Image (cartoon, rainbow, N blue to C red; front, side, top):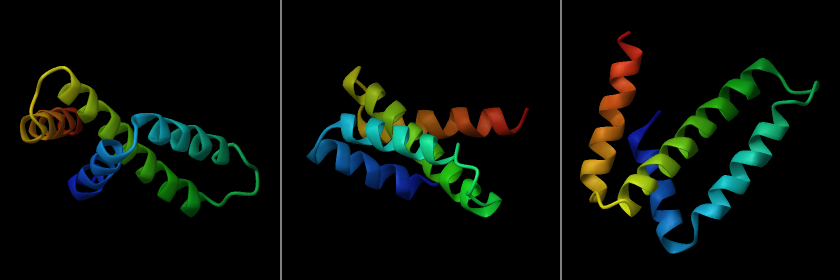
Length: 85
C-alpha cells in the first residue's frame, strides 16, 4: 500500500463519491478472474485494489468523525501491525 495513492483516491472520493471507487473495485476484481490475465498483471491489480480498499476504509473513518490526517495515520498503523505478525 502506498499512502500517496490512498490520498489521491481520497481526493477523488471528496470530489465525486465513494461509489465510483467501489464500482472500480468490482471491475478490477472481476478482471482477476480472467484466465487470460498474467501473474504480473494480477500483482498490479492487487496493489491497486489494496490502495482503493484503503481509501474506502480511511473515508469511512473520516465520515465517522476522524480528520483525514488521523484517519490515514491510524490506517497505516493497522497495516504495519498486520505486516509485523
